[in-house]
Length: 466
Image 1 (cartoon, rainbow, N blue to C red):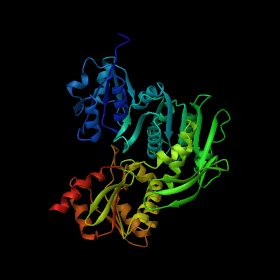
Image 2: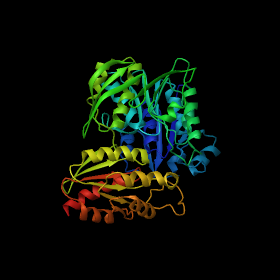
Image 3: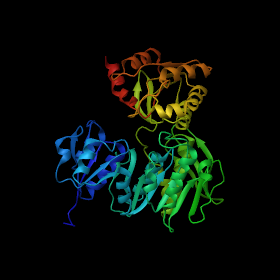
Image 4: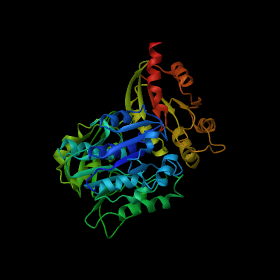
């Protein structure tokens, strides 16, 4: 029996983190089943293609198959969920997603990428470079990498590259060989007390590295710098604005890309490195990816060539087409810092006016970072700002925290007086009607947020043909 591959069941299998792990386990020969209330997701179709068994909804009879050996669930799933409690009553082990990821990371030379912002893009950049240089890595990402048209890839090579999530403290369970931290910020304050609490989780993550491991960290993040030095660990820093082992100079920002010269301890190692995604933040993400891949033995010439063909990650300033002669972009940014850099990119790209539709995500984040949201959305030169209702992400509403009030306060602080609240509807008709009344040729329309706002795209396209 010890040679028999187990049957692993995932509760909420369509989630971006869950589906990636399920895909890799399926490639390893495990029987994989899972349930989800949304079986129309792209991730579900990809899981079906590799042979996973999918059940629509929760507590389906198939979810209680007697052949199930292990049940995996994410932090979004309550431990009181009927599938969890029933499995426990039958003596079936139930483990959180991060613990299953930790088990997978033990099977290869593992690289974990963590940070408040930029970790999906940086993980994707590392993965792309390793794929293009024929390293055949295994990859688990919190977004759909266009290079592989998926969020996961099985490879026969030595490396496993994984995005590491700090949102629920489970980052502390991961034991990588090499770690990269993009930054540390006030985020996930529904889990953490304050920034010092957040820093403790990142420190525990670094302390899990073996004595022969290394940490590549961004020196531009003050909260990352505050963790250093770590005498028991080899640290390599990278940065643009702060002294670091690996840094960039002569950065030129274009509307859809950037170029930079890369230096290692004062010596130029690569000139005119092209980063084919826009923004200073993505130049920094690319620098981190180059630093990591250099530690894996790749030459800067090979990395430079590989980086040039990077196609981006879904929902990271992703071009969705034209609508009424305006360019339409979708971005996952939901934290004030992410919004700041995305708006810089959008403003540079826009030929004429910049129209932003923003859906805040989580009452807790909106509440704890209220002033920061007002600052970033009132001070950037946005020509038209539409704010729709908060996407709750299973949270309970907080009194006085709503998009009507947020829009009013942004309008009060903005010199352009452009913030408008429009209610969220499943068919988006109110938003579409308003956009239709204000959008002109050569405008740029940006959909911003981590909720369901991106679902408006097909409705927008259908509205053209009516």
